[in-house]
Image (cartoon, rainbow over all chains, first blue to last red):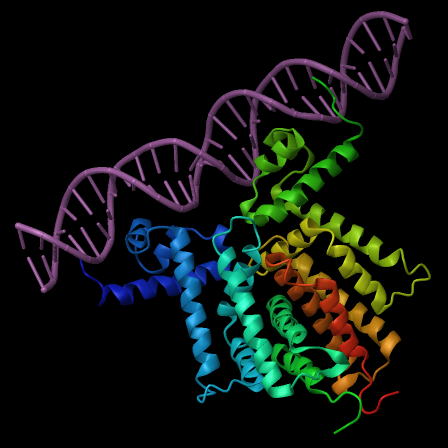
Length: 197
Length: 197
DNA sequence: CCGCAATTACCGAATGGTCGGTAGGTCATG
DNA sequence: CATGACCTACCGACCATTCGGTAATTGCGG
């Protein structure tokens, strides 16, 4: 038998990327280990040699995607200063990566189901993301937002807009200008309220 | 054999309601006809006697849910005048109906998948809803929204916020005040822009 | 009101398939 | 010779759907 590629690690990553694709195309429940294996030229059991179960495979896929996303977010603002423009840039970046967006949309919604293996991941992720986003907003816009909103209210709205736009964009990419609409929402948050500056 | 309940129609509706529950709990792919049948006291084949296939069952479930939602939206504004407050009331109503919200969240995200039987339903639904919502916004707020937004931009943002909040709320009902946050977003849209009134 | 045919409402069994996962092996590499 | 990287061969469970019944009900001619 031919030892195909380099290290164990690179083989694992190859499988993770294929799994991300398949999860995007069929969801977690609809995806089969065999279909992931086929895409990477292995048997179903070959995949299970690297990942002990479908659940664990999903867990590692999510973790990988999160790390990559963090790279996109953190790299531009090198001093650690992440701004709302950086977030808008991430939305723009996502508009080029349909598969990634689709996997995230499908999996996060699916995770809402009781006992879903990704449920804890997403619950924790949203919790920490909201807290972090509230601080980004506060740092850039202060405590006084239009219509008396607090940064703690704006943060969940921000993610709601991102997620909701992704859904509509995935269904009708030609009708929905995702980055433009997200920037429109941002300008709503940035608007001066009682008097113009 | 005992003819259990009344008419064929009422039996069908009984099945549709059970199917809505199961779809909410497991998604479309994860749901089995047998589990729906069990919930209504039939065999799998009993269900297929009323609905020719799983796809058709899903289609009728979605149609039924849509009709009910329309009732909630249209009944209060009897003169045909639906306002943004009516929409906010719908969000409040939804916060009492977790199962319905969950089915909608899971199924709409799942529908993004290629060849999903609900894909056309949701694509069309969002398209017509956006057009309709843009008119509601224009009728109430005029063409001049804060930060130079148009009603055509605000409409998809509105549904994005609704959907996105539902996802976060389903994952953490205690942390997310869905109706409150939605009203906060609405007040953002209603805010007077250059000078206070 | 009776008897009988047609219809409805199911169920049992089976089809052909896929699922995740396990056991046990083979073979090339180090 | 030991190890890791696979494979074949299974397992039991579940999947949607079809077929062929059968029991209960309805409608109808008399």
